[in-house]
Amino acid sequence: MTVNAVVSKQCPAVGTVFIVPSNLGVQATSLLVSGGDEIFVDIAPTNVQEASFADPIATLHLLGPTGAEFQIPDTNVPNARHWSYPVVGDKTRIQCLADGKQEHINRGSNSLSYRFPITGLAGRDCTVEIKMTAHPIDVLADSCLWTVAGLGADTTNTRGKTLDALG
Image 1 (spheres, rainbow, N blue to C red):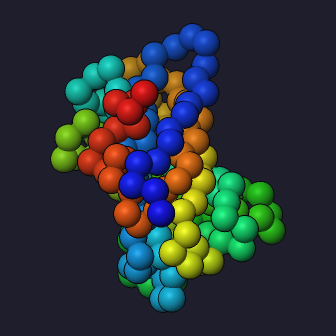
Image 2 (image 1 turned 120 degrees about the vertical axis):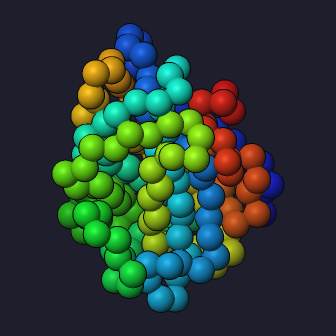
């Protein structure tokens, strides 16, 4: 198990990045399905203290370990959240839309949280790509593709921080 995950990003050549993953981790027991773990991640702005967005979406692509896959929540499902597999039949990719909502988010305690149930981790670290998208309201926004390797239940460097603060 890795205490510090390795974070990398691919960003557009132009544009100011305003939405980034934050407070990323693995929880050993999912709140949204029985018998699985979950990856949790928040969405937060960067280069501004706060910003408003409509219809924010978090998209995750699980690159490993083999045999792990995302599950659509079936327990305690929050209202106005919609999970789907963006590639039919591929459970290594999942997205969640905070449907029809305008979210006012900041870099502190008011970031928007997402939870993604996952099975097959069996205590192993995972590697996941993360992309946050939304319709910006009164801000110029773009997004990066973030890759996080070595993410596990004991990972500490991605919790309580925005990923842009890690490099």
